[in-house]
Amino acid sequence: MEAENPYLRLRREKIARNQARLKELGLDKPNRLSPQSATVSKITKKESFNAEYVPLRRSSRKRSSPSADLSNVPETVPRRAKVKRSSPKTVVFTKEPQTFPAHSARAMKLNILKLIYGDSDSPGLLGKKMAHTGKAFVMEESARLAVADDVHQVSFNKYSGVQEWGNNVLFLWVNLGAPNSDVVNDFFNDGREVSWFGGSRMHENTPVIQKLKTIGLKADLEKSSSEGIVLWCRTFVSDQKTFSPYVCLGRLSLLTVDPSSQPVKFVWNLMDYEALSSSSSKDGKHIIRDLCGL
Image 1: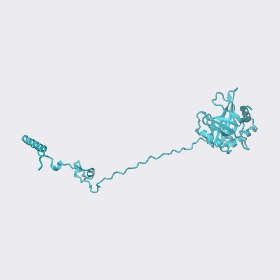
Image 2: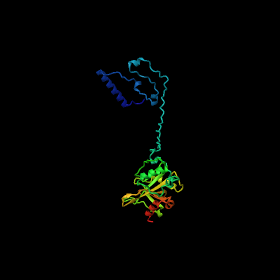
Image 3: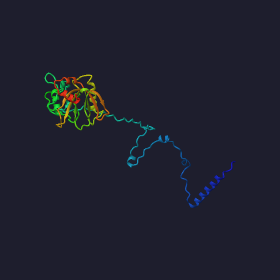
Image 4: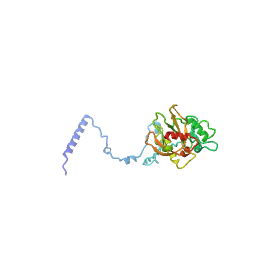
């Protein structure tokens, strides 16, 4: 027989003494916990989740009503499926075609060959000096001759060095001999070439600069009546301190462009130089000769 553990013996004696003392004082009470309840069984999460669920009704009205039938409720509740969030649709903004008033130059289609060489009814404007100064007179005369006879008013941007028409025709305005000018336009190669500078706010990617490059490069390949670039020049008259009327020097094709220059610098070829030199009108010949020192 194994010897009794002295520690357990002392513990048991101490418990007996304490219970006797409590009994003397009238403080002894029966143990509330039964041996079975004292042992707490471990319940797993799965067992707890699958345990029978009995709904509780707190109000007296609800307690008197029949309980819900939970016989068809599955023991395990399936997890909610993940909802794939759809990404917001990309909104594409399409640029609507720009519209212009009927009297705007950008709404008119100008016949560039008729403007320069005319037809059986009207002579062209190549090498001719306009009867009056200013861009407005040039625009109105050009529209009357090469757009329609009944055009009396043309709206345009008089401050721009480039004027667009409605069918890829552009007018290039060049001032020659202007005092206090930041840039100097000049003729080269006996007047067959001319330099032109874009506006101070223009750069290589400005739409009108891109348009000048595209049409100017195509001009050598095809001489179209529906598109092209026309050069208009005027000179500064120092004794009168004003500019002379514009002279039409014909169509241009692009030779070089320097996008690193500020403003952007172009060098153009005068496509109608031979016709201009042999023209009966001397205005075009004189203006080129004077500028080239011939």
